Each structure stands twice: as C-alpha cells, then as structure tokens.
Length: 251
Ligand code: SF4
Image (cartoon, rainbow, N blue to C red; front, top):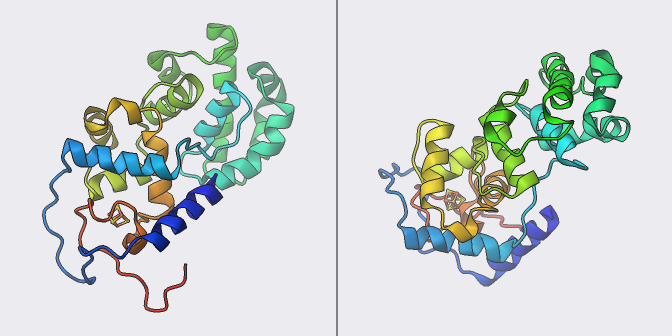
C-alpha cells in the first residue's frame, strides 16, 4: 500500500509542473486562513484519486488485536509495534489467550516498545475487562472503549473507524500538523482539530480522511521539512514558505 501511495505520487509529480506558488525558503509565514469547503473537497478528491482505499499500517488479525496494537502504538512507530506484535498475536489473538499469557510474558514480547511495562499491564487488564464486561468482544461504543485500561479518545477513534467503519477522526501528530498547516482546521489541541475536521470534511470522505492525512503527513508533509515541491495539494495549501525542489533533484 505504501508502495502504491509513493508510486502514485511519483506519477503525479512527473505529470505536474512545480507550483507557481512555490516560494524560496526563509520568507515569513502569512497568517493561515482555513481552506473553503470547495477547496477542502478538492484536497480529499486528490487524496482519493491517489489512494482510493487507504489502510492503517498497524498489523492485526481481528478487532481485539487491532485494539491491542493501537494501545501499544502510543509514542511508538507502527513499524516498531508490528515487529513486536507479530509473535505476540500468533499466540494471543483473543482476550482469553492474552489473559492466560499473563503480564510477564506480554512484557517480554513488547519490551522493544516505549513504555512497555505500563502497556503490558494495560493489555492484560483490558483483556480481563473485555471478558468480564463485553462477552470477550470489542465494544462498538465510544464510552465503553474509553473505559478500558490504556484506551483514550484517539485509540477509541481508530478502533471505531477501522473495526466498525465509523467516520471518526483520530488526531495523531501527523493529522494535527497537516490540518494546521494547510490549514483544513486550526486548533491548539488534538480534540479541537478533531472537532474542526469533522465539521469541514465532506461526508463522502469521512471514512478514509484520517488515513489520508496520516499518510500525507508521514511521507510528504513531514514535520521538519515538508516535501512541498512534490505535494499534490501544494496549489491549495496556504503554508509558507513552501519547500522548493532540491537542486540535485532525484525522485
Ligand atoms: S507538503 Fe507543503 S504544500 Fe503540501 S500540504 Fe504540506 S506544507 Fe502544504
């Protein structure tokens, strides 16, 4: 999927002249003004044309392992989580098996992930809570999800979106940055950005919007230096100064 995303971008880059709005680095950024509804629809139409069915990068085999993977992903990369969970999910892909495995073994499996001690405790505790309170199923209910150990609003949003198809907006560091840069919705907190995005993103893009924004932030609109010169929405984006193409441009 990543390969598809990158390949699609490269195709667009090859077919598109550099934006006439591109300005050299070093100029002061103008006060951002959020895009209009029509412009936001354009942004997501282009994302959809590049990657019609974007997927998250956390590996999982069912709703339970998705929930565990998202809990483990706090302050960790998806690649780092996947490396640890491949072996873990082979032996514990249900709440019962995770509870039987126990905190010590879970901790050993995930010790390469940040905050692993606390996360191991939460994974075992949430497995017990699912068995006791939800018939061993992941509940399709925001409040019930957020009542589970280690599950916050962002985790609940990811699970509701990926496991149940809700058009939720999970705001991670990438979504927060991209939304404020373009800007789609301005906000000083993830929750403010979440509400803002939910209010302006056209319904037809709601299901995939958070994955498009994560992919865009991870591979193009990067934190330190965004690749504006090869960005498919640079003519719409109000962020300045845009990053010009490198002198020794190589795609
Ligand atoms: S990569 Fe540059 S042009 Fe594209 S959205 Fe980010 S800041 Fe805007």
